[in-house]
Image (cartoon, rainbow, N blue to C red; front, side, top):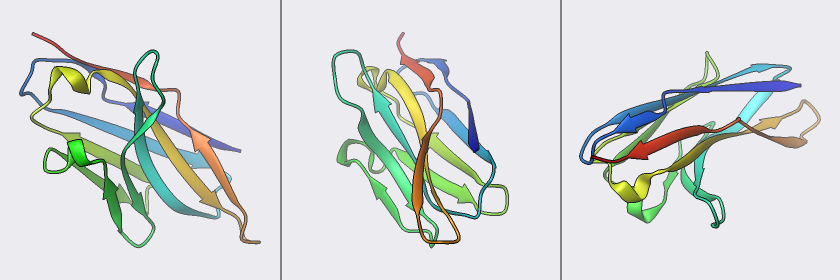
Length: 120
């Protein structure tokens, strides 16, 4: 089993910054990708950013230039640095990790979610 622990959510004013972190632990052979998604009530969960094991990144268009994702492979952690936050960034942010086994199977794990609220 793999456990994910998220941290860093909270309340921030528009234009401010927050950093989210997610640490994966447990039975991990290797991690294919780590990423962040977000969800607001009544809407589907959407990609914020993801990073693969070779450092490749993907960002949702509305986050490009404002958010930066990074990864520490030695510690199995992923960090999302968010800046120039807007009220529409308010959501529950979820960490997603894709773990690969020695036999080549991939398993998806989700964190419990952390609330980010952007409001004055």
